[in-house]
Image (cartoon, rainbow, N blue to C red; front, side, top):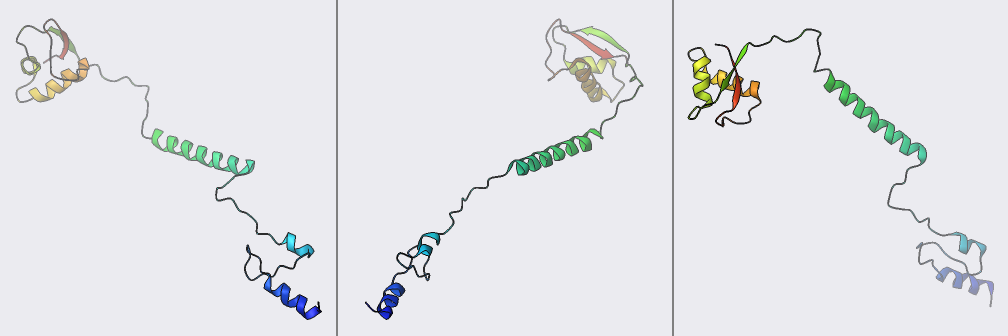
Length: 136
């Protein structure tokens, strides 16, 4: 076989993996020309994981600092609201009890205050229940 015929045969052998790259049989380069397989997932080094962790931790601390600034404590105690205890009788409603102690036209605010003082979730009352009500 002549040198020209060998070159023509070599030109016809094209790599199935890398088109347009000629592959020569028995050439040492034919085995070294391989595409690098890349992974589609991201893998971080130890340093990268540390950087991501510290960044997220810093953001969390910053969020806590920014929201904690909205509350403040003082050495002063709050004012104590003078109250008296009322026992609920049959037929009593929270509105009736509030109307007895509230100033005229202020019954709704007194109902809300009684609910707050007694940690009531609703206006439902039970006979015999003891309620703290503001002094009127």
